[in-house]
Amino acid sequence: MSKIIFIDESGTLPDPKDKIIIVAAVGVDVVDDLLDVIKKVRSQIQSNKKEKQISEIKFYKAGDRTKTIFLQELIKKQIDIFVVIVDKVSQIIPDTPENFALISYFLLEECFLFYRNEKIDKVVFDKHFGREYDQSEFNKKLSYLLGKEINFLHLDSQNNPEVNSADMVAGSLLWKYSGKNDKFYNIIKDRIISEKFINWKEARKRFFDKIKNLS
Image (cartoon, rainbow, N blue to C red; front, side, top):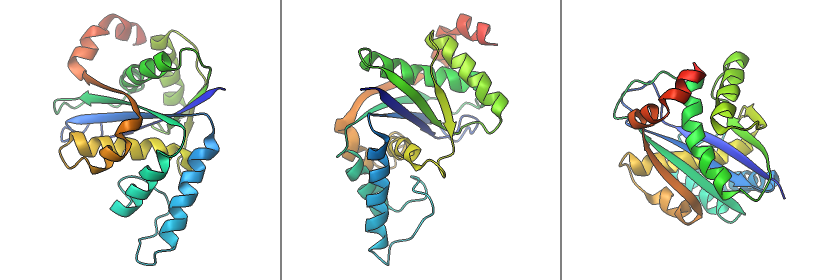
């Protein structure tokens, strides 16, 4: 059976206040499993009149109860979680297709290693770049780094809520590694296949030649 990988990030590259960036991937066989999670969460929220109703279930919009229900439902499904923690050291990093492609490369490297005997049907990003040109440049640069052509999609999570599974995972990891708390991380930690740390300066230095070619 082929795999579909959903990717989203938490934290901001150019913001010096964000010391770390989390990029998370959720691998799944059946997209309907992720949509089922959202239906169950909405059903439980709607049954509680005191719970704040939100148009889209995103980590930083949802209340603690919603986060907990979502993550508890998510780990009941056949999913695999992969995470890259980028240590920015409070740098201002331009949010370019090149830079985001490099970070995404480290994440997908782990995904492809784990799924080396399985087919990757597509890799879906929560739309990071609004312009089609930037999306195209990102796809080219990431394919170059990976050394293979992949079916990359950039989808709006409002119209494709299954992407929010990666957002909820990324937010949980950011709360842990930014020192806020680890209660949401603890819900999903047993489903994490890879939790990779990279230092931005070292990563750029290590891939200097390839990055030069990207430019």
